[in-house]
Length: 148
Image (cartoon, rainbow, N blue to C red; front, side, top):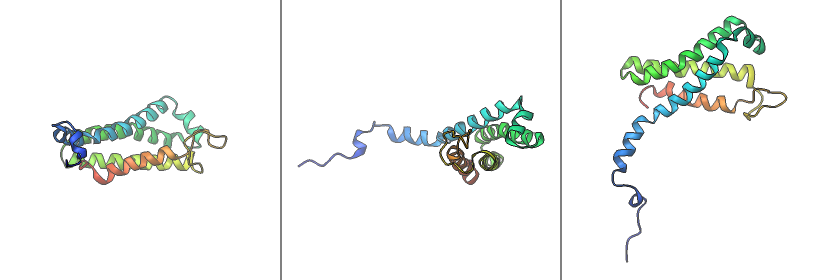
């Protein structure tokens, strides 16, 4: 009688080496997703700060700070990830914290009251589902820093 095959029998011989290398780089997928989202939203606001502020019922000064943070978070995540020191770790954690502040603000000003991300009559910018997912990613960086 032959032994049943193990799930590892189907994997390539060098899978352990490849998967451990991939695991050490996986944090870049989350860094990219969070950074791209923040960069897109920040860049979209740069030339329309007064109009965007008025649309959301915020002061132009507040919207300028929000836009600045949305542009700084991706830079902090990139530099933090490339800097293997306590400074890099701090930059990564700071990026996570700043992202959470912006996302909680976005939920409270725009998305509160609707879970689904799809736009509706009451929530033309959609609900908070996507922002909550981004908060989870930002929490990961705030808690783990570069120890990801």
